[in-house]
Amino acid sequence: MRVRFAPSPTGYLHVGGARTALFNWLFARHYGGVFVLRIEDTDRLRSTEESTGGILSSMRWLGLDWDEGPEVGGEYEPYFQMQRLPFYRAAVEQILDQGKAYYCYCTQQELVARRKAALTEGRAPGYDRRCRYLSRREAAAFEAENRKAAVRFAMPLEGETIVDDLIRGRVRFANEQLDDLVIMKADGIPTYNFAVVVDDILMKISHVIRADEHLANTPRQIRIYEALGSPVPRFAHVSMILGEDRTKLSKRHGAASLSDYRDSGYLPEAMFNFLALLGWAYDDKTEIMTRNQIIERFILEKVSPAPAVFSKDKLDWMNGVYVRTLRPEELGTRLLPFLEKAGLRTDKETVLRLVPLIQERIKRLSDAVDLVDFFFQDEMSYDPRLLIGKNMEAADSLDALKRVHEVLDRVPTFDEETLERTLRDLAKQLELKAGQLFGIIRVAVTGKMVAPPLFGTLSILGKERALSRIWKAEKALADLVDPEKM
Image (cartoon, rainbow, N blue to C red):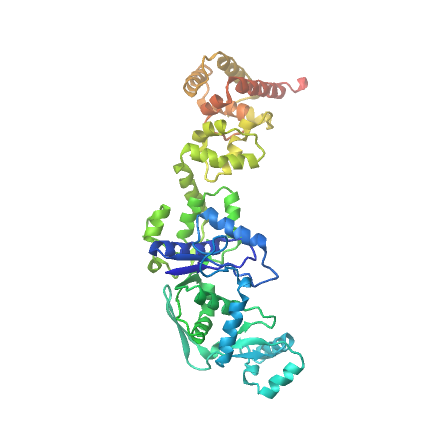
């Protein structure tokens, strides 16, 4: 079993491409086959080294290692199409010699004019095969005009081409509806439909697993395989991906590049699991699976021909599940780059102490920034009115906060158990609900209405920093009680 993923480096790796790469990778790993990565860079205007690097980086992040391809090499290198031009030219000559292809001298302007005329007259706008029947004299006349010729493949004019698709079953195409496609442009660069066939033949690809948007190309490609005297690989066209509103997936649905998801704090393990379920399922209830379980269970027979639905909410949920399964040390290590990127001066020891406070509360690694930034800031900015307890006046909140300052200053140890017992007892003495008092303290020491558990927060901050923040909060409340002192 030999499969390939062949992206064009004209942009970054997006959800659809990543899902296609993953299905190919899973198929190869399930059957002990070979996964080939090939870069189809014949679009010289849009292909960039930056995009190639981004694709390779995203695949590594997702854990999709390739057995042959860029930076790895292999028996059938090179794995960049622009480095393989001699192979395509040799294949073109072979087909021309057999009379199954011909030179086309039509200019772009002529093709556009004839296409417009066909549409106006209600005819199919495909190529009208004008150059297919040129005499030698007519061809020589065009060459005398210094017209540069493309090469077109001569499709059968009758009958049908059948695609036996492993996912969609038998699909029939009437040959008369398939025009003669260009296989080599006048500048000597092969077109996609030709280059992909030549590469798949030379790299001995046994199964072509790709998006269903390529299904319409398949009958032409089958005829090219036959013209080159090569066995036709098995095809499997996976369904398109839709947004939750059942329209084509776009950026508004979350169709960002894989690197965007990485930078937003999604785990590669969660993204791997999520992408595998976009069109494939082990059964009707199992959703969380390890990488090895998915490899073991993945077969094309369970890939659905129906469109897959991309749910950002489900991805967030699944990522949260994976976040909660990480060992605290591992989660702390993964959080550090996100905290540092936010400009926080962190230290690993403190971050590891914070992990138990936030692990159940975050879905993405980036969520941690807003939850813990106050630990790494000397000064906080917040609306002093947030210090006023629920159903309380500013003066009452100030009195309560002063008492908090007094009792915390006297506690012998600043551990969570001691802090919780002390502050719950104080709430009873003040005849306040625990939530009222704790809410005031939370804002005082974190500057937030929502923060990690209070007693763990206080313990990690330490007595000196906690009391300093409470003292500043007292001053802010005092200004609310008596504005004239401002």
